[in-house]
Image (tube, rainbow, N blue to C red; front, side, top):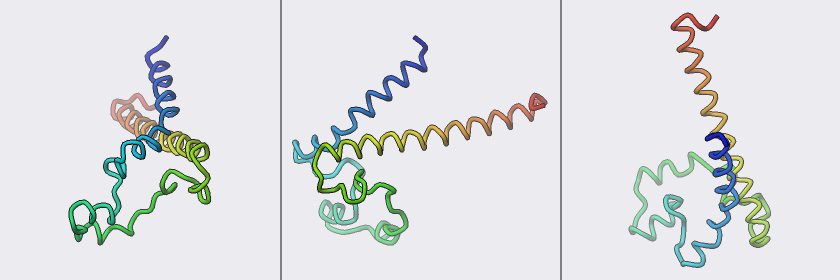
Length: 118
């Protein structure tokens, strides 16, 4: 089996395990996932919201907030698991497209610099 096939299989397994992020934090009373803190969570942890974070907090909103589709927040774990997996697939697809596009641009630039682009 080729190395790339093994990598895609591993990635698929990780996608299927992504719903663990739904119930493990709840099971261990962990609160928010590492690095997914909002201003309120940070204020609770350190006592204040840093000025830069407060200033930029409205700049970005997640395409799929809380990894759930609109109206699915209260539908239970099966629906949230599907939304979590869909979020993983969407995120991976975006990253793969960006990386392949950058790779294609760099290869094209490198080839044309050496006269191979013709």
